[in-house]
Length: 298
Image (cartoon, rainbow, N blue to C red; front, top):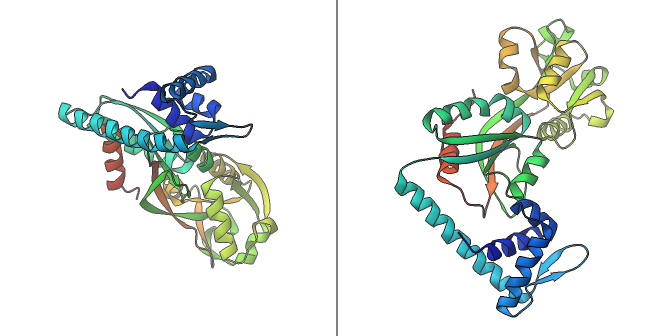
């Protein structure tokens, strides 16, 4: 394994904080400080500048960090090569997903993966886009599948497939048999939205503006953190909503919910797989990534 002090230094440099590095590495903050102190004594120079707000690299620290990155990459390549030689895909895989994907797409993919690689233990973590990205950047997830794109230099993102959000109403709603409504009609209806920070919420608001509707002008009666909760609220007649077509396949088939088109709005979006640029991807992570690339939800 790579020298622990070098791993600690790399984590502190990337997290810009002793406390955040301690959380990522599951060490105490005093242990982090001790490792950095020992490393600075070994090289005979200060590697980090500490202040109240964050930790920054000194000139010597920047030099060592570049070498630490190279050594980390070599170590990861060696681990991957040895895993391929052994011919087995096994270990523990932690996959993150936003709610729609985690509830309506990934369970099927995870089942397929387990059939092919029964020795891999999978943990699936579901949260909104902001929280999933925080966990990816903190090194807590091997892979993640998200709605939309998030700009960050430490992220690699690949397009997976396109999804479309649809306006849904209960079967007895006056719009249920119309197929399409004008934007102005939406202002009079109670609307249920996903919570702030949700990728779905961002797509909905962008689509509404494209149709000439400012979200603040609508009668938003409820914000919910679950697509399933939104569907049940609409079925109960509490309001209408805009959610992924992926999430209403069963309800559409059994006539529990109806789709209605909002004229002038484009609610299409692309799902992406995202992972940390510098985090080692095991053979299990690579296999799961390949399965994602070849899968389609419709």
